[in-house]
Amino acid sequence: MSPLLHKHTISVQHALDGVVWALKTQPNYRIHLVLSFLVVCFGFFFSISYVEWLIVIMLITLGLVIETLNTGLEATTDAITREWREEIKVAKDVAAAAMLTFAIGSIIISSIIFIPKIVALIL
Image (cartoon, rainbow, N blue to C red; front, side, top):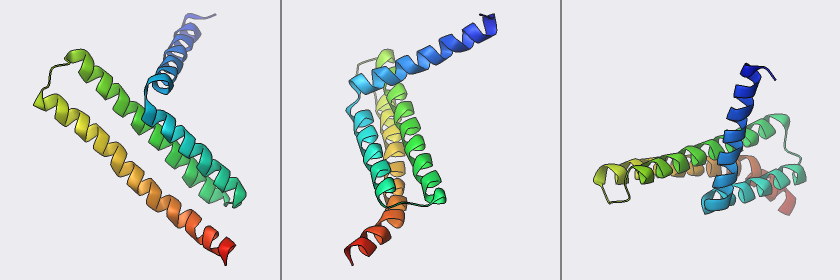
C-alpha cells in the first residue's frame, strides 16, 4: 500500500472510531439517527420528490455533522478541565445552540415537505 493511501486509510479509520464512540456514548446522536431513519421511512411512504429527497438527505447529514462537532467540542473542553469555568460553559452552550437552531430549522423545513402530504392522506 502506498504511504499516501495508508495515511488516508488511517484517517478514515479514526473518523469511523469517532462515529462509533459517538453512537456508544451520546444519546442525542442515537436520537438523531432514529429520527433520521423515521424521516427516510416517511419519505418512502409519501413518495417524496427528488428535490425533497435532496433536502431531507442534506438536513440529515448537516444535523449529524453539527451534532458530531458539538460532541467533539464538549469532549475537548472536558479534556481541558472538568472544573466549572464560564468560558467553557459558554463554548458548550453556543455549540448546543447551533444544534438547537439547526433542529428547529429542520423541523420547519420537514413540516413544509411532509404536512401537505399527511393532510392529503387524511382528507
